[in-house]
Amino acid sequence: MKAEATSVGASINQALVKGTCPVCGILKDFQRTLVETTRPQPDLRLCNFHGWAMARSRGKLSRSTPGETVTNVFLEMLKKPLAGKVSSDGCSLCHRVLEEELARLRELAQKLQATMFARWMKTQGTLCLDHAEKVKEFVPLRLRTTVDEVVERNRAELQEELETFREHLRHGIHEGGGLLGRAAEFLVGQRGL
Ligand SMILES: [Zn+2]
Ligand SMILES: [Zn+2]
Image 1 (tube, protein in one colour):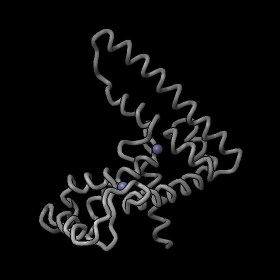
Image 2 (cartoon, protein in one colour; image 1 turned 30 degrees about the horizontal axis):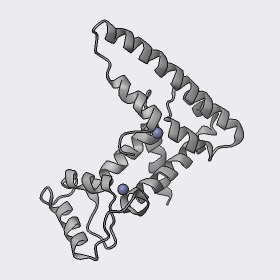
Image 3 (cartoon, protein in one colour; image 1 turned 60 degrees about the vertical axis):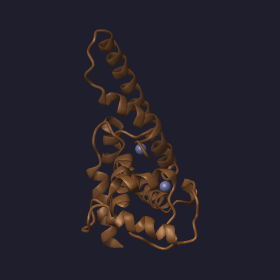
């Protein structure tokens, strides 16, 4: 339990990259690993997104022949009473991602209690709208204002950068497309989450 808490702490720190939401970053990695390491198990249910993610993954992290693990997962699913298509509410992998999200939100909320960290987030940190709203449920009232300030600065910066980007596009300069990905992440969270 203790070791787990330590590794969790290290990860939020590692995910603190300017311009991207740390919770989104962690969940994206977590989800990729989850898909690549899922083993055949009783009662495994997959939503549309995770079913296809499994089909594409070919079990990269496993030691078996590429594709063997996923093949076994699908075989086991075919042999059991068929569940049909399930929504994310019934998906085993969506559940795991949700648990991880909750743990990371709690961890971030805990870190925000430290003045230095809160100051860093206020001046340089990034949060997507979704995780900003969610983390507010885990922090005391005064820190909700801090989270709002992070969001407002992110919004203003993105707006300014997009306006500059649009100007550049009008002059035929197309570099800086990564900005559109950052705008998407801010508005709707990381792709596939
Ligand atoms: Zn996020
Ligand atoms: Zn799912």
